[in-house]
Length: 547
Image (cartoon, rainbow, N blue to C red):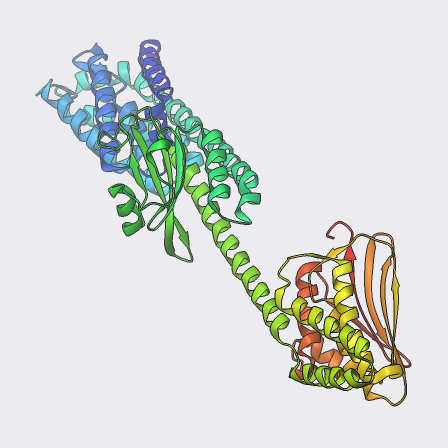
């Protein structure tokens, strides 16, 4: 009898095993939470298992040796109290109705409902890893209670003893099958972690591939990003939108979309409005009739919806739970990358604005003095005055028109020379300049060297009596290139250096501070300032890899 009972339990186990191979059912098993519809389907399945257990039972003296309790307990432990209790009530009432007045009908009704309650309690309050043990214990407890109730309610008492003596042993030991069922389903749930790891890896791989294109978001980069996503998740089409327009669309039906045009999909508008994910696994009213699956995920930046990621498939029911999970994670990564990209763009624009402000901020005293120097030179040396006008013109043009991100070192030094010519016209031999430049090819941001030279002249050389020298040095030191401006002036105060590093410089040193901040942003470390005897040296290093 025990062997026959195990055979029936094995049939239940095999049926469940094959059901776990069905993708839709497997997907339901792997979810942490289930919708009312899914719970209803699961409840019906386990009710059928319990009824099958009753109908496939072995009749013994008016009782039925069956696997009903196994189905009830397994359902409750795996899917919660509602599945267990409803299955227990349905199968218990059924067992009572098919044998009203039978010796075991009322005991079976009571213990069937109790099995549902106990299994629900195990689901709610017992550790997941040990539920299979508690499940076996609960099943055995219910069967022992069934035997006790049979002995109490049976008339005559001897009939109850006869029935219990024949069915107790196989019925109680047969509950070990509950542990096998729970462990098997748990193994399917365990696959969820492996699948989640795979999906996370896929999302990270896509993020790594698309990262370079987020550094400058435009029509071309978004098209490339959508192409990468489409290929890696094997979608038929992928689109990215902002809150108003389609920014990029790649894949099937691409010819129907006009990039930069207003969003026409009501589902997309609703997703942006609600901030909730939209899933359509068998859509029939899409404006591209061949598209049957649609997943729209809102993109957020600091809690504000900024657009959507849209994934399309032509085959219905392609969007699985694991794909949804991966796509949600991917959308979160994209949101973060787009936010970082936007911050970088804002920072870049701020840097450009700062550069433009520095370019246009020509010291009026310098301009006034330069014009006076030219005027006085015109009388005694017209050719020299003409050269100074050309130098001043070049200096001003450089300040007002240079907008390249990186310029050649020769262009930067030409700006310095234009400035020096004007200052030497005013101060003559008081100002001496020496160039110590290696023959190297170097590009660097504009307006880094000239402000340092100007600072050395105005705050160094011209504040001391007698002549002074400014040395402009650009040397290849092997791994780095050092750009240095050294003067023999009065020397910089330690308090100025401290304020510069603390970011609290005075308005008189704003040019030096500007260069320090830009060098720090571009090359990682700012200016290095050394007090000399006499004078000051200011330098910064450019690694060859960056330059």
